[in-house]
Image (cartoon, rainbow, N blue to C red; front, top):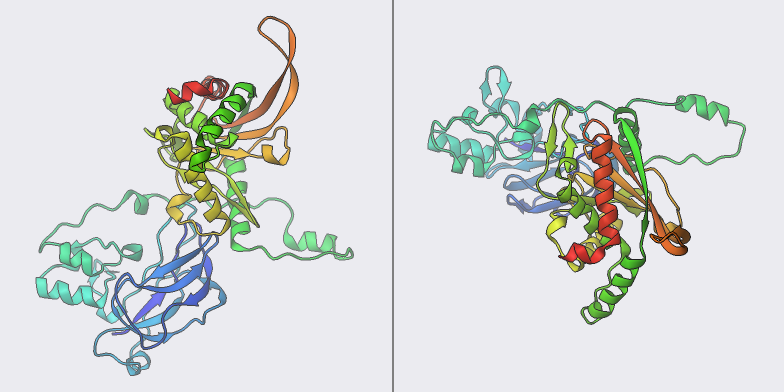
Length: 430
């Protein structure tokens, strides 16, 4: 029977999206893995792949349509031997209601199977593609004993081919068993009250896009639910600036130019290894201590920001960090990052020094335990070790810390390690 293709959730926070472009037309044959559409999420424009093979029988949502809710039918896929006539003659497949938005969920929406053809176990419908059902019948495999790898656990061809008759169904994944994230708490006066207050004043009403809605919800939730405290230090950069200048001269033939931000990333990554108890995330009823230093770096883009994550930052050279950061930042500004490139990490860096900001306090991005706010380096008078007054390039930083994960003394150890690394940059290469 014809299968409805549903609007997928292609990013962790996606509730609706824009069907930017169809890559197929009605009558085209598609195989599993073929790109069938480009969809704009709240974060990026992403390609949508077919889960099953078949023929596009009907396109239900025109390209360019905005505000398409997740799990809305966007097209109909026909099996071999079916025609467009089967679409109107077959009963409409009941679709499950869209799940409540979960900030941490990265699952795409499922492609629902028609109810009459879907197996039932304990009163619960099992979703499987038509091809998967045929193969299961031929192999004598019970679909109820298979965990699907398709969108929202839908059973696809590969799942059945890899299954053995009588195979036990694995335990539910931690992700599916985890409770839904609490919605962001509302704050401030209502929209109606604000609009009424300014009704007689000239103004322009700016509609929020998906990214700005997500930022507003996530940061409101973070500020209200995470017990922040703040630690501040001044860091002298003269040794780092001199060392950076020397390295850049040597790296010039390779086309590499290190920034101060590259050194900050490296310093933070090594500090998380030097103070391993601080390399952790809050997981609701427990703390997860990470082995590697996965550092997120805030990148400003038009209308919002991304925090791409550099995995294994502690083991990468300064030149490798610089190259990877430039690539991530470039693709972030073009909204071409994949979800796995901006999800995760235990620690983040927000650098506003290039905008002339002396110091500021950043909001933690859950489940991270800390974020370092970096201000501009400026010449300031300092008292040297011999007691004499001298001038130095000083950068002010503020470490915002989640007190549920990191206590004051531990946070101080982490910030001191960051400071030591930056003031002795050659040690970071040892």
